[in-house]
Amino acid sequence: MSNQEEILAALKEAVVEYEEDDCAEAAQRALDEGIDPMVAVMDGLAAGMEEVGVLFDTNEYFVPEVLMCADALYKGLDILRPHITLDADIPKASVVIGSIQGDVHDIGKNLVKMMFDVAGWDVHDLGRDVPLESFVEKQLDVKSDVLAMSAMMTTTMMGMKKVIAMVKEKNPDCLIMLGGAPVTRDVANLFGADGYAESAGNAVSEGIKMIGRLREFQKGDIK
Image (cartoon, rainbow, N blue to C red; front, side):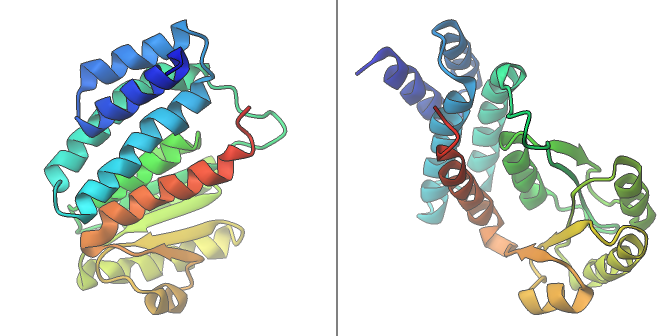
């Protein structure tokens, strides 16, 4: 096993075993050894999170373990991210994300946020129980490419429709993504959203699958 393979394996294992210190140490070793930091993120950290997704799908891991794995991933990401130079020709995408007013659930939202982080997007996280006007104000302020909202109850979900109407009126080019247990493709279409992420119990695995698609997409860019 080459030095690079060994370090990537250590990053992956640290995420799966939710060892924050080991993850930070392996990330630093990757930099010291001159490994492309984006390769370290994708084939180390993100590959580990994909494995966590398998463990979650097979009921070997549950939400608490997944969140600890995410914490470990962030420890590594914090060290690697400042050294990633994104292609200057590709404009850096940005997203405003949050759980809608009245909704205090944010596990799925946090995992989706992590996918955007890994992808190198500018992420503006409004948190949970976010007033409807705050989504609109923040989106118009930072002019994000995407507005992502999460709801876990049908009562709070209705607020999404109001936000979409307000944002689309002032910024029709903004793409809007919805997610959460009660949200279906039909609901997203009805509300005027541009896309939706399936959620409920599979918010975790859906989010992690996004990492897999992201890695495939970026394979072409990794030297």
